[in-house]
Amino acid sequence: MRRFWPNEHSFLLDDAEEVDVHLQPVVQDDGSPGKVVNRKALKVRVSQEDFEKIWPLAEARYRLSGRLSGKAITLITNNPHYKSWHPADGGSVETISDSGKRYQSRYVIVHFLLDDVRETVEA
Image (cartoon, rainbow, N blue to C red; front, side, top):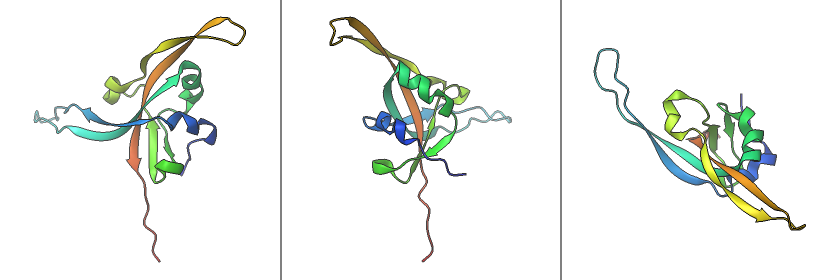
């Protein structure tokens, strides 16, 4: 099934930074060491409010359009293999509203696994 990343959340990926995720080797059943797995990912700083909106989209794969066309992402939330890249505190920013009232915006650092999903088409 091909699911596309919802257009209303596309802006969250505008400032995404492409990073490499290195998974530590897992010892095999026979005691031999596994190999290190390297994956591409997108690192994004989003507001706590936006993170709560995309939380239900976690752990599912979504195709992208625009500048990341031909790629797919999966939001990492609680998968134990990726615990180093689970959502983390992204700090906060204090701002003054137009009415002069101070408020604080909290941010979260999230990672999306990034896969190439280009498909070949026979002519």
